[in-house]
Length: 355
Image 1 (cartoon, rainbow, N blue to C red):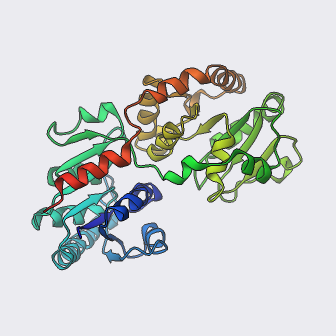
Image 2 (image 1 turned 135 degrees about the vertical axis):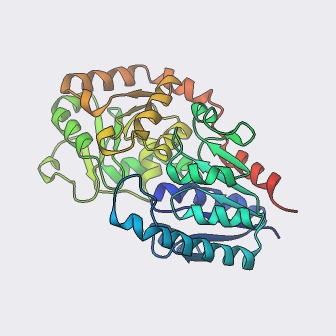
């Protein structure tokens, strides 16, 4: 039996691709362990799946001034010592890292212990944690053709992102029963992430009276962002957050409006859902969502509108144009070579794992 250590954390996006790999790894009889932070979101997500979880110290590596910049390096060093001890104890054949700052000491310790390591970069440009980890990696998986040019040629592999396979098994009728919507009009699914997206929520709500003439709308608003005054609108349903029924909502939707987080848009690609991406503004991020969105636009997978461009008229026109040309977007997504991510990554893991 081969043993693998998975690592990654800080956000759900650094964990869910690891979770997507679990069924295949179990089929191949891997002994699976996970290294994450003591109390990060990864701990809750992994422990509920029954995977052995090992917490280590973690510190954030910031590009800006913070007093914690003086203390976090010691947490990172402690994390390295703890990861090194765990790797020596567990003796894994391979490490797979999804990124986040907790993964850095694990990748470094893996190199010191001569364990082959594969890392995965979701965004078009590598984040700081993965930039630090790339020199210690055996292979680097990525989601975007443009990213390959930014990585060492001998390490870069365009795989796309591992997608939870249950998302592909949605039931349209279940979604109709759950939402109370009808088969009479096409459906738009709006996703702002678990925390919601205020700018997207507000923009959609402004045009609802016109939008609902031609479409039905399922609106995932984010925690605390429901608007009770809209509950009586015919053809409009809103939820803070959806977990188990999400696959069914995808199956029902004709087009999707979404932020442009890498995992989210790779799910749309796998599901072949024509989509309008409204990336998080560069004022509120390092601009990675804008780069992600523009790459998908160039590949013909998505329409894109930045927050600063939104007007009622432009948003309505773009939605109608997306719907009218949805077959073109679906065709482009079908021709993508980023569809078999799990198989490609598992093949890589098998190829580098120590005998």
